[in-house]
Image (cartoon, rainbow, N blue to C red; front, side, top):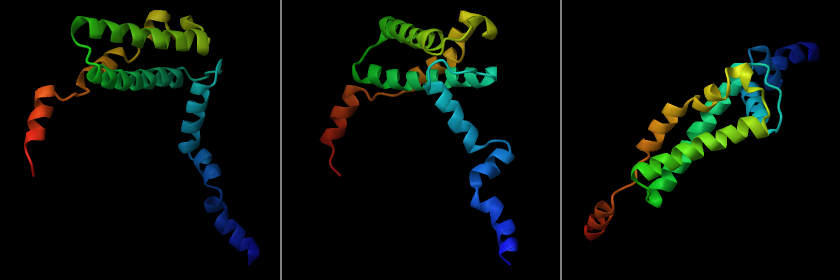
Length: 142
C-alpha cells in the first residue's frame, strides 16, 4: 500500500520536477532572471538574452515615464534625455555587466535598438494628470 501511495504522490509531491519535465515553466523563468541579475552569465539561447534586454528596456521606460511626469520634463529635452538614458543604461548592462560578444547578436547597434520603439511608446503613454485637472478636482466635494 505504501508503494502505491508513493507512485500516486510522486508527480504531485515534487512540483518543480514536474515543471522541468513538462518544459520548464516557472523553473525556467527564475533561472533567466537569475542569469540576468548575475554578472558575466553564460547565455546559450540568444533569444533569452534578447528577451531580457527587451523587458529591462520596458522597465526603464515605465520608471523614467513616471519620473518625467512628476518632474515634469517635456519637449525635445525630455525625449532626448530619455533616449540617452535608455540606450546608455542598456549598453552598459550588456557590454560591461554581462560582458557578451556583441557580434554574436548582430553588433552593438542591434542590441541597442532591441525593443527601443516599444519602450519609447510606453514612455510616452505613462500619464501624468495636468495641474488644472488636479486643482479642479479638489474644489468638488462628494
